[in-house]
Image (tube, rainbow, N blue to C red; front, side, top):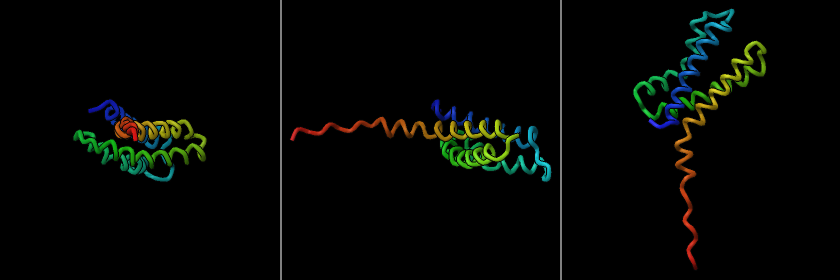
Length: 121
């Protein structure tokens, strides 16, 4: 597994832990069962977590796709709920980390290709 793959997997685990901590312990909901909200917020990360446990490289892609949802959620929460601002910014940072780390190998391969110099005509 590459360094970016390990970094992406670590970011997925941290984001999953943040969801449990945020919605289960630090700012639990007042009108819904705590366990239900934790389950709903962890659900988008479960496919990438299962793929990660199996050692599949597609876990990085699906983790990045799920991180787009968490990025949007973090922006919305940081903008609207003052009590959740610190947690929301942390969610934004982790989401960007997963997206960048998950696509790092592909970006490196894409941009490392050199164009052949033009021939003498």
